[in-house]
Length: 55
Image 1: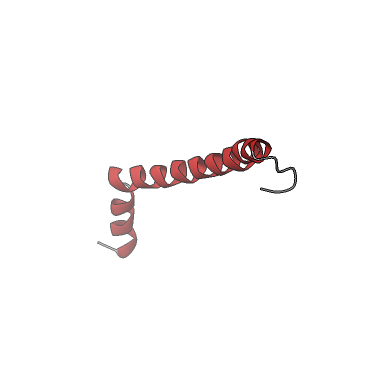
Image 2: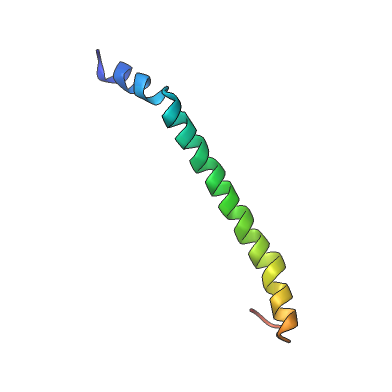
């Protein structure tokens, strides 16, 4: 078996594909969480604490 065919066999196994999908979903979830905190939660906390400039 050549190195390329061995790599294809390894890469097409379900565990590798599932792991790749998990990494992609995790990255997207991290970005969504960051946006929610920076654009919704922090301005609310700043308003509650009486700060108008910055957090």
